[in-house]
Structure formats: structure tokens, C-alpha cells
Amino acid sequence: MAVTSLLDPAAVTAEAVLGAMRAVALEHGGPGLTEMDRETIGSAATIVLGLGEVDVDALAPVDPAGLANATGDAEEAARAMRMLSVMSLADGEIDAEKTALVRAYADALGVEADYLDILTEAAADEIAQAAACIVRKNAESFPHLDSSRLSISAVAPFFPYKDEGAADPELEARYKTLGELPPETFGHHFFEHFNANGFFFPGNPNGLAEGFTTPHDSSHVLSGYSTKEGGEICVSTFIGAMHPDHPIAAEVLPVIFSWHLGVKLNDIANSTTGMFEPRHFWTAWERGAATTVDVVADDWDFWSATTVPLEELRAAYGVPPVDPAMLA
Image (cartoon, rainbow, N blue to C red; front, side):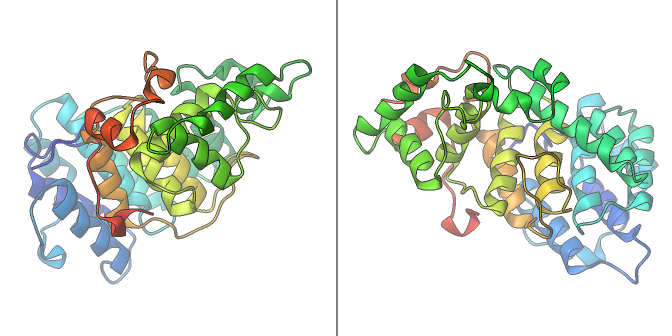
């Protein structure tokens, strides 16, 4: 059974978590569960909780007191709340009733978390405030990104080389040399990832900040997720489980808001709706949690990794292989 940094199925009663997820889903006031509800709960049971196939419609809803009774400590409660927060957004809407129920679970479990405040703001139609908080949390979660530049604008931390005199041709040239490495190496794959997507390397005036794009796009290469909308949901979920610095507020909410709820967070990210695919999401969640080397961490050495064959690096970092059907 897989163990995840976001929810440990050995520590929280699986049936209670699933029952609470069902209760959140039913809070929308419709005639019953939607197909998205069933997929989200059923795939969580299989992929995260290791229960195999479950009859989602037969699950007994579990109220806040019941879930609180099934958890042993604060960390277990926090892990369960992360799943409920995802459940509240699965149908692609920011629902005030679902959000209120999620807060009730948090109160019963004694959980206080920044993402709960963000969800509450969004449910109160304070979308701009919620989006600003999400962008700030995301920027702060990357240790080599200068998040203080948010005082300039929401995109300033991500485009430092646009400032007058800030372009760094030597840094850009160093990244370009990765294309000269043997084709099996991680560095060559990183170069090809940028080349295939038409990205500019750090140092270029149009390039993203090295402190963000290098760990983010390294995660794309290591995980195998694309830069399409579904791939961005998966890679950020992968990062959130691998680098648990405010994983929901900093990683999961930004991509769900952008690519599932249709909320445009800033001038970097586009937005659309309906791109959340539960099986892909939970698989990315589990894969990130199983990864043993955090490439977003302050002490990760990108340049030392560039000469290592990609498959060898994946094995050394514990990145689980994945069915190609689960790659978005």
C-alpha cells in the first residue's frame, strides 16, 4: 500500500475519509452524486487508499464528528482535510455550501490551514483576493524565487530578466550547452523539453526566473507530464506531494483554479474549465509523495544532475514508473 505525505491510509480510517468525501459531494443539493463525484471518490479509494474497487453509492456519509473520531492526531487530521478540499472542487464549481461543510470538518478536527481561508474567500465571491493569495503562496514555495517582487506586480517574480540591465546572456548560454550532452542524460532531456515547447531559458529577457522554471520544468521531465492543461495539473500535484510547503495552497489550488474552475490567476497562466481528471490527479499525488528527492528544495543541485541518464536519475530519486495512460 502506498504511503503519501498528504494522506497516510495507515493512519486514517479509509472508510471514514471516503464517507466524508461523499458527504461533501452530496452537499451540492442535487439528487445525488454526479459522475465526477463517483470518479473522484472511487479513484481515491483505489489509488490513494489501496482499497480496490468500492461501491461509492453504498458508502455511508460520515459527518465531521465521525471523521474526527477516526483520526488520531493533528497530522492525520490535516492529511484528511486536504482530500476533502479537493473533493469540494471536483465538480468544477466553487460551492459555498460545500466550502462551509469543509470548514465544519476542519473545525471538528482542529485544523487551521491557509487553503481553507482561500476557499472561503472564493466561495464569498472574493475571487481577486483568493487569486492573489494563491499566487503569493506559489511564489513563496520556491526557495530560490524572489517572492518579494510581488510588491511590483503578480508576475514580477517570474520575469526578473525583463528589468533593464537584468538579462543574463551567460546564464542563458549555460543552459543552451545542455543540448550538447548525450541524448540519454537528464540535462539533454531538459534542453529538449524547452526546445519542443518553445520556452526561453533563464537569463533571456523573455525567460522565466531560474528559481521557478528550473525546478518546475525539471519536475515535468522527471515525472513525464506534459505542459498541456491536464499535465500542468498533474505536475503541480506531483510537486505538492514531493515538496510539501503549503502543498494545497501553493501547488494544487493554482492549477485547479486555472485549469478546472476557469479562474485566471495572473498574466502568465491561462485558464479554462473541466481539465481535472481524478485518476490522473490521484496518481500524480501518489507519485510525488513516493519521490525521495525534492527537486524544489533549497539544496537540490540541478547542474550535478544534468549529466546523469534520465532513467537512472528517476530510479535514484524514487520517481515511480507510471502507466502511459495516466500521463496527461
